[in-house]
Amino acid sequence: MADNNIHKTAFRTRYGSYEYLVMPFVLINAPAIFQAEMNHIIRPLLDECVVVYLDDILIYSRDMKQHVEHLQRVFKILRRERFYVKLSKSEFALQKVQFLGHMVSAQGVHVDPKKIEAVHTWKTPENVKELQQFLGFANYYNRFVPQYAKLAAPLTNLLKKNTPYKWEPKHQEAVEQLKQALTSAPVLILPDPERDYVIKADSSDQAVGAVLMQDQGNGLQPIAYLSKKLHGAKLNYPIHDKEALAIVIAFKAWRCYLEGRRTTDSYIASRKGSTKIWVPNYPPLRQLLLEEYHDVLYAGHFGGNKTLTGIAKHYYWPHMADDVQKFVTSCDTCQRMKSNKQKKAGLLQPLPVPEQPWQVVSLDFITTLPPTTSSHDAILVVIDKFSKMRHFIPTHTTARTEETAQLFVRHIISQHGIPTTLISDRDPKFTSKFWKELMSLLGTKLAMSSAYHPQTDGQTERLNQIVEQLLRAACKDEISKWDLHLPILEFAYNNATHAATGQTSFFLYYGCYPLTPQKPTTSATVQPAHDFITTMHQLWDRTHKRLLDIQQQQKRQADRHRNDHTITVGDQVLLDTRNLDISHLPSKLRPRFCGPFLT
Image (cartoon, rainbow, N blue to C red; front, top):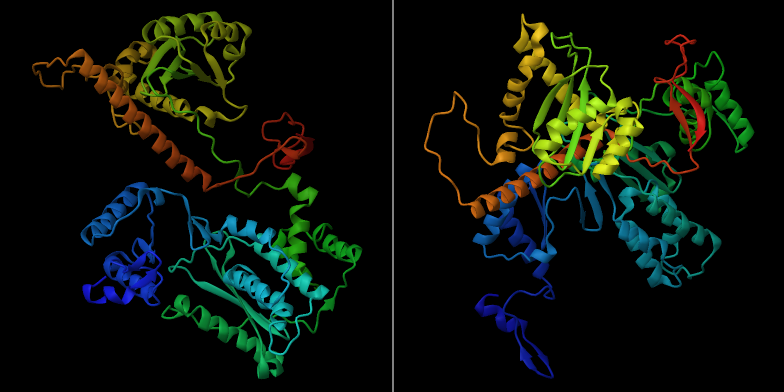
């Protein structure tokens, strides 16, 4: 507070008189002054990476590196202006954030789940004041509710002057419909100023409505809904004027999105209704029409849009698009015969990140290599999931499980100890009784990849490709002696910096770099043992954190292309036929899925 204004904040209590030394929110102009001051100091970052509302500062970034830079810039400004941030009320590096009663994420904006819980428990309004409170809450989220004004019309009529408060079934129905609309409100996508906008507007006798949409690669999706109840003379407008009014109201409401944009010639798309046949609410009749326009041979089992277009040429009923979409997506023939165009089911489930070298080990075979003079025609590849250290062990395809176990003991356990977890595919050697009992005696947990899903151990699968490339470059004319090159290739690989850890496997494991012909000869400095151990543990801690961060980045990237779909016991599912032995059917014409099967 300015010294000459402090006395204006004086108030008296039984303990004496007090004055504010800093600005309180109770002053009538305090919020406006505070907002103006925040806008002033944050102005260089507004609409670049910051949104500010009073004491709420929202910082948004495309990735973690950029986010750290933005945080540093904001903190620098706050420090310079002597604004203080309370750590306990701050959150950083969030994928979704609660802001002004909304939940904001990369997918869009939706109603705060805590507010949805309040809607569920909201009791029936018993007087005008309680009704005003309910409508005030609902109106705050009207952008999420299609036809909000129409749904709320019976309730707003109760608030008219000289209207007695008499609660009737239509009012209770309106409350329930609004509750249902709010609790099932869609996620509204965030507008992309680089893409075109689409407005759909319509009107009824008592209200007009519109939806602002955009196609960001997944078809038209809503950005915001708009609905206004008509009053006075506007109720007497002819229908074409009401529809024009809906467009005008939509343009005024979304002027901030539409003004100044490059546009093509405007046009108004009208839906003809006078020439269409109204289909009554008789399910068998509507079902018959859906089957006629989708299931029969000349209908072609097309998707929802083409089926809807065909029906809409001649027929109409409320929510027809929803009924068509539901019918098409549940078509048994389409589900079995068509390729799945949806995102893959299930979010990425990363494997746990080990905390030190050789805790978690994965292994796999590279086979079908040309036989060497030593009768080797395969490589057993073993990789440490922490340091990324690899061992390339020559072997032969016909090696028995016992021989593979001897190689594992000789090359891995003797040098690095017994791992806690062993990751592998379902090779018969690794599923044999001998191998399982051996690992059980060693106390090693077996983690095998899912059938037909090599991505479980994608790191080893990728490494196999790189090893083959190295062999091709090293062998050249000595193909029959490729096994002699494995030790030096193993050394080269382990002495190369890995992108995930930022270090070489050699350094992460031994704490130093090996002497090579390229390395200048220098006098070695010996670090005290205690300091060396401390340094190594610090290095491992940093590496563990780095691996976790990279894993989370990969998960976020992968989950953009996947659906969070959970299958529970008792669900019926269809099985992909790509890996089934149905060779009696031509591959081009065989069903894509079979079933259903009970989970």
